[in-house]
Amino acid sequence: MARVTVLYWQEIPSLVEVREGTSVQKHQLSARFQELIDMVAMRKKLVGSDAYLEQWRKGQPEERPGEPKEIVAIVAGEIEARYEQIKSAAIADLKGD
Image (cartoon, rainbow, N blue to C red; front, side, top):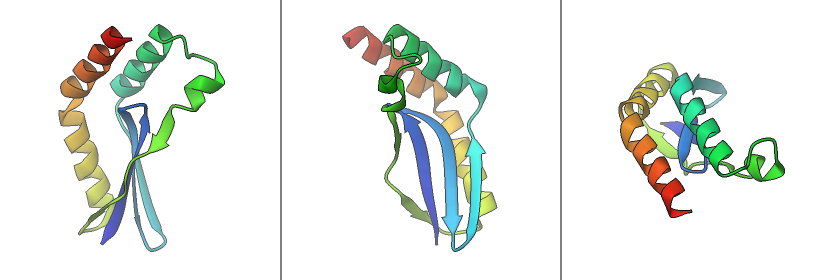
């Protein structure tokens, strides 16, 4: 079983990492995720500050069967498919601030 971990800025995913033994596969999500992170950070006035860096966290690891190279592509695809939902939640969170 491979161990899948997603790196987040607040609740916005940025990177998928899959480990199995000594094998590690990483997949940076598309630029639109980083653009969303930057937009939210700017609106919250966290750009260029320690507060920005403190928002990064690793998600709860999840075990998945298969080869790391295949798993990283599958998980990244699942997240990419949810982009609009993730974006809507991030924008809604801004309105609550």
